[in-house]
Length: 245
Image (cartoon, rainbow, N blue to C red; front, side, top):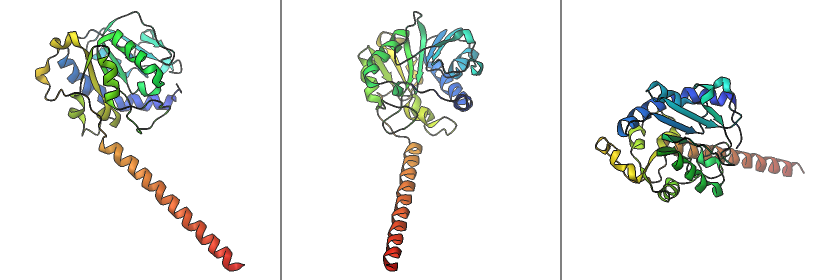
């Protein structure tokens, strides 16, 4: 996986703090008591830091060795450098696992094993991954939610899609969370969910956020317009050159 810059992590933490607080506040109301959490692809640890403030005692963040320890917002001893492509091995078990916008960075032939790792870490998994053509640094396996849902189902986990509808129009939340974030639950723990608090708990489906769609279309038209201007300029040059001969 290609490392991100320190500037990226700094901005990501600032942009993510609000989203993490909003989403986790709602999520913790639906789950049984959460006293431990692990974040695979944690960056500087924003989501874990938010959970700490909410009373979660035991946390662990995992990300690449390129993450500068000085930028961490969690205790350094609770950060574990790891290479997700080669597989990570953690003996601990947690109440909640978080993995947001990470899975698309791993080759397709590692996807099944990676989901197996997540489901082995916790019975409740907060998950998001980039959809096809979302774009981003070193995205090699962008897939629709149904793809990931099938991999979780194979591990006896059930997908719940109730978070996206609650944050869909909130521009203070980064678009990739609004578009992609889901909860997966080990089927034997379903009775512990406070489902009466969920208006929509439908099966994960592929959605494209209008903000993403508009950005892509505008970029396409901008490139198309630039290409058209370039072609017209070349045609004028050839016509001018032809007249001079």
